[in-house]
Image 1 (cartoon, rainbow, N blue to C red):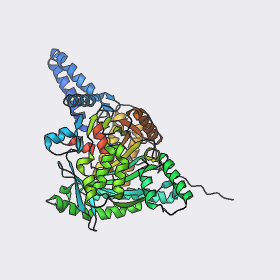
Image 2 (cartoon, one colour):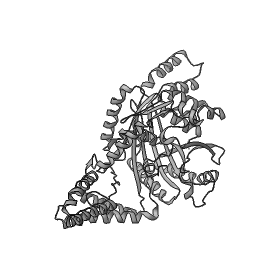
Image 3 (tube, helix red, strand yellow):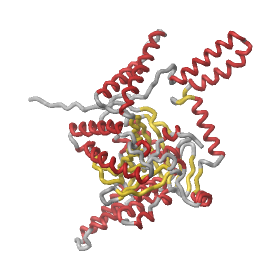
Length: 497
C-alpha cells in the first residue's frame, strides 16, 4: 500500500531595500560621514585647538545619525518629538467640526483627509461609482468591493494558482504608468445585530408556523454575539497626469480611469476573489463614517442596504463622514465614539510562510479592526536597474567585510542570496513593489483599548509579523487604512507649504 503526501507550498519574496553604504547608511549619508571625517582630519592638521571646539558637536551629530532606537536613527526620533511638541502646542492634534465650519464655511475631514473630496462617476454600464480626489495632487482613488474565497475549503493546488495569479496581477501593475498604489483592506467588526435582524425580517414569511417564527427570533437574539461584519476592498489610486492621453480636466481623467478599471477587475477574478461591484460614493462615505464613529455601524449598514437614489447621497455624504471631534494622543487616536491604536509593520517574516499566514491577523475578533496592505509598484522599465543596484550593494557589503577581515554575518549572507533571487525572478517576469502594512484596532470603550492592543499584537506574532506602534503618528496611520488613497511615504515626501 502506498500513501501520497502533499508538501505545503511556502512563499517569501520580500526583503528590506539596502543600498550601498557604510554602517547601515545610504550613499548620500555615507558620503557626508566620510566628508566630515576628512574635514576633521584637515582641521587637526591645521590647529589642534580648533579641533577641540569642532570635534564634540561633529561627534554628537554623527552619534545621532548612527545610534538607532528600535531601528530608527536617534536624530529622526528627536525631529519627530520636536514636531509632536510643536503640533501639540499649536493645537494641531485636535479637531472640532464646529470650529472648522465657523472658519471655512464648509465641513471637512480632519488631518490628512482635509484635502480630499468625494466624487461620483458613471461606470459606462448604467451605474455609478465613487471616487476620492486629492485636491493637492489630483490623484483619484476608486474602490472595489470584493469577496475572497476561503483557502480552508479549497484544494492546495487551487490555492497555489490563486497566489501565482495574484503575483502576476501585481507584476502587471508595473506596466500601468498612471497607477500609483493599490491598497487592500480587510475590515472586520462584531456584527451590531441590526444587519442580521434586517435581513431576517425581510426574508421571513408572516404566515409561517409560530414555532418556526419563535426559533428565528431566538436565532436573531443570540447570533450577533458570534457573528461578524466583514468587508474586503481593493482601492486603486491613479495619477491623471501620468495617463498617456494627458487628460486636461478631472472629467477626462475619470473617463481614462473608466477604460482601465474593467481589465483590472476581470484579472482579479483569477486571484481567488470575486469582485462584487465598485463602491459607490455613499458606500465610501459610509466606510469612513463607521471608522470614525463605530457606534453608528448598524445604522449606516441599514441605510446602505435599504437606501436607493439621491436620498442616500444626502444622508451619507463627505461632509457627514467625519467625526464631530477628534484628539490625537501620542499612543492613540480618539475620534467620535471610538478610540483607536494603529501599527505599521517593522519587519516582514524572515522565513518562508504558507498562503494563510495572515489568517489570524485578519480574522474577526472581539474588536473592530482594519488590516491594510499597500503595494506601490515600480515601473517595469526601472525594475531591472533597481534590482541590479541591490545586488551590487549586497556584494559591496560582502567585499567590505572581506577587506576589513570581518566575518560575513548570517543575515548579510542571507540578504545577498535574497537580492540575487529577486533579480533572477524579475528576469523571468516577476514584478517588484514596495509593500507596507498597517493595522488599526478600534474600541468604543477606552477602558478596553489595552485588551484590544494585546489581542492585535498577539495575532501579529502568530502571523510572524513584527508590528511597531505608530507613536505620535496615530491620526495619519488611522487614515492610511481608509479607502481614501492615503499613502504615508508619499505624504512624508510632499513639500510643506
